Length: 110
Length: 112
Image (tube, rainbow over all chains, first blue to last red; front, side, top):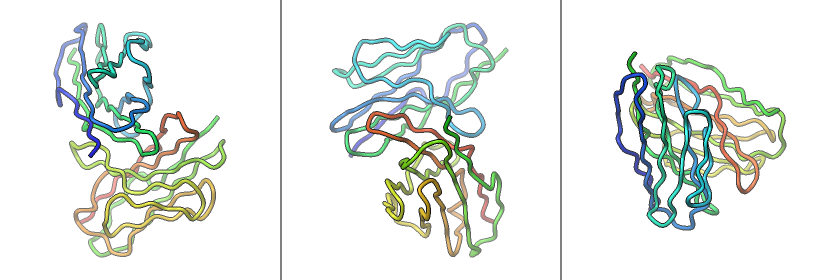
């Protein structure tokens, strides 16, 4: 059975800290891995990763995929209170639907 | 640009009552459509997905059903709600083979 595990499940940091969120997976016929940010309602898309070792970057957020070790990390530098959210990782196998992890709840304190 | 609308945003229903949540997508044709449920503190659970009009696949056996009467319309229904149906319901869409999935604003359902 396809599985996505995220760690930690919950994290509390102070503004300015750097955080690393982890996503590991076990799927057959991996196609891509997606990161989403969910604040109050709908998850919003952050990154899609398909190749190992190629960092995707958007402002203070960056992500990278390791297809050999079957994991991805999401880094947030110089965190702000607006980064507080649940971060979801999803893996897309070929021919199958998205498999979501449980999410990491990040709280950034002022 | 593509947009997705989902309603109602909030719903409080008694046990045993019916349910209808509706979702429409604009700005794209023949999208893949999804219904997810997110229980408090848990991940997204895929309930139904559809690759075309009248084509519905169910991922989890339950008292919910879905229908796709038009290309860009997806409806989640129940004849009799259970307490365990409470949760946050998200409609989503995607297009193409290598595509992200985009979510509606969600519907909070509380069954009392």
